[in-house]
Image 1 (cartoon, rainbow, N blue to C red):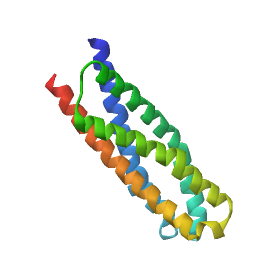
Image 2: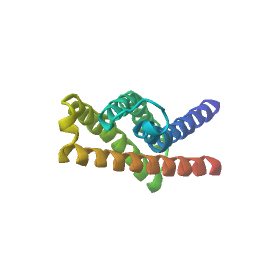
Image 3: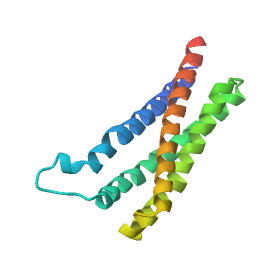
Image 4: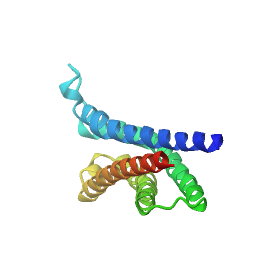
Length: 159
C-alpha cells in the first residue's frame, strides 16, 4: 500500500512538472528568445538564429517528453489492470502520449532538419505549417496533461 502511494505521488509530480515545463517553454522562454532584441542592448538576434536556439531547447526537452509518455503508459496500464478505469483518464492519457510522441518524434526533428537546410527552408510554407502544427500540438499536450492531472488527483482523493 505504501509503495502504491509513492507511485501515485511520483506520477502526479511527473505530470505537474511536465505541465509546468510546457507552460514555461511556451509562454516564457519562446517569447523571450524570439524578442531578445527588446531585452538585450547592442545585440541583435534574427528569427532564424532565435529559432536555432529554441529548436535546441525543444530538442533537449523532447527527452523529458519521451519519459513522460513512457511513464503515462506504464502507470495507466497498471491502473487499468488493477481496475481503475475512467473514460476521462483514458482519453487524456492517450492524448498526452500521442501529442508527446508527435511533438518529440515528428515535429521537433522535422523543424530541426529544415533549420539545418538554412534560412530559405525556414521561410517556406511547409516550415510555417509544421511550426503552426507543433504549436497546436504543444497546446493540446498542455491541456491533456492538466486534465489528466486533475482527474487523477480527484480519483486518488476518492480512495
